[in-house]
Image (cartoon, rainbow, N blue to C red; front, side, top):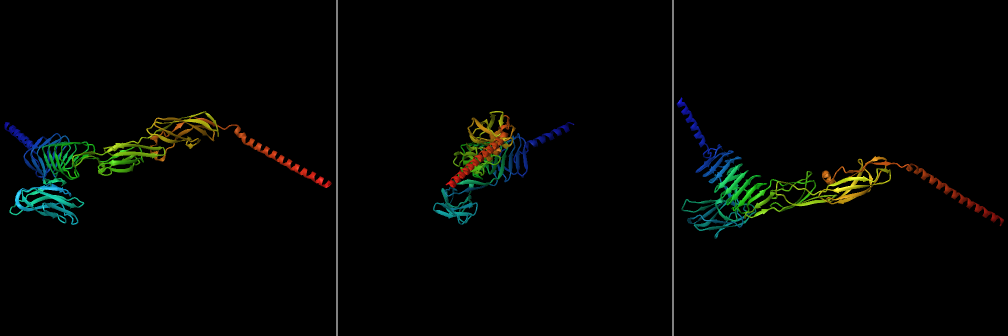
Length: 548
């Protein structure tokens, strides 16, 4: 019995001992390794496979780890990776971009009195290009070739290489090798090892992936050839990252980089801070050349406004300081970040100088009520809300001078209107009975914000009965989509007015006709009398003529 118990305990202890030693070093056969407890890697190791540091665990790497191509290290949320050693990608695909004013400073030591340098390029340089490399008195023409040889002393003399280049596209030096007779020693310098001025080290591809959803702590560490993404917290202190840029710092993440070197980027920046991620960047050396230290890149620059058809005049936008005019869509939305350059709003350039976009937006809504506009700094955020100041014209009340009125005779009323909006407007007010436009005097007025006016109006009706006068603002077509935001669309109403047909109005035609008849009769009598008189006078004249 005792023997069985002891044997069982021995098995348990053996199993626990084996578990405690699991994953004490990186995987080597391409398998996946989960780290579920705190673990430390010391010494030199080769890693081939995927490592996942689980929530609540910390992986500490104190030694030097050579990482096979396409391997992955993932730090989960709540986990940490602490690196004081090095992670070295197995395949280091770097190149040095050569410009017309680039200089290389070379010294391979005392190998021989004379020899040659073999310079390898990333491509065959077109024959039409001008690409000359000069060291001392020797010049070699690289046009039409993917490598050149140039004669040089190899006795420990400092060599300075100058370039004369006329070619529009990027040419990279991959390596330079010293060749000489009498020795098998032929030292080679890779692009990342070349001492240069006015060139840019680029990394054409990453060797392995390092993705951090938890915490990454680099202190006096070295990383070569990583594709590094920070989703949460990353700290780079007194460390060197070569061929591991750009470091992508995702939205809501943060990174601190202090007294470190980030050399060799696959893009035009060493660090890309996305959207509203945070960065502290002090006392660092970057790739240089045309590669910025860091940029803030917005995923979009979408602006929500309070109306369609707003003209948005943009000046000083993004890295390229661009100018453009656009119009908001039917939902009042516009995206001013049409290209990556327009979405870069902050950056530290290759010389370590900080810059921030000073863009400006002028939003204008033109209408029959006037032009409503605002000018604001361009927001440095993926989304923003910018509202154009608008009027709010309200027909408050209509006070008719009486409750009864006679058809076809006018009645006076006082229309009270006010502007409770934030912009002045000049408006026309139309009046209706029911849904039909009715006959009134014209109403046009201008109102500044906070102003109230009483407008006199005359109203005629051509039918009798009880009627209510409704007056409301005439809305220009361009503002119809936001009608509820600029006026009380139902307008204001008067009290009911009873319109009646006056009694005298029925007799008026007969009176007029009677007067006309009398006038005609009187006229006829006068004409007849005049005619009779003329006839009588004519007869008397004839009698006198006969007597004579």
